[in-house]
Amino acid sequence: MQDVVKFAITDLQARVADDFSVLWAGREYDPGPVYIELDRTAGIRNAGRLNYGSRRASAEFHLLLSFPEFARTLNELEADPEFTRPVSAVVRSRGDILGNHSFVLSGRCDLMGHALLPPGETKASFLPGT
Image (cartoon, rainbow, N blue to C red; front, side, top):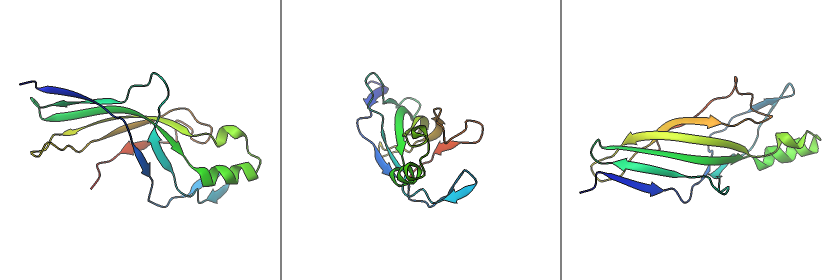
């Protein structure tokens, strides 16, 4: 029996359901929904491993986070277009393989450079779903 099964992550689409505000240029804004999807840029690998020997799962995938309503607001305010582009992120997650062969992943989310999100002030995590 093979202890390690590799898999490709072929689709991911999510919407941030929690309300939050963004402080920009001294004002607080409701950014509206944030959408998350796989980054399908050529050459990017979105994959994982199920290690049945250790009962651990791991995955690494690349995401794009977009905020169309807030981007429209920024366009109306004639902000630099760099502020409205999607945010690139990489999620590296791990978790246990459960008895029914499902798994629950959580882990670090590294946000790539973006005009709206200063690296020293912005953090993100990938939490297990319910």
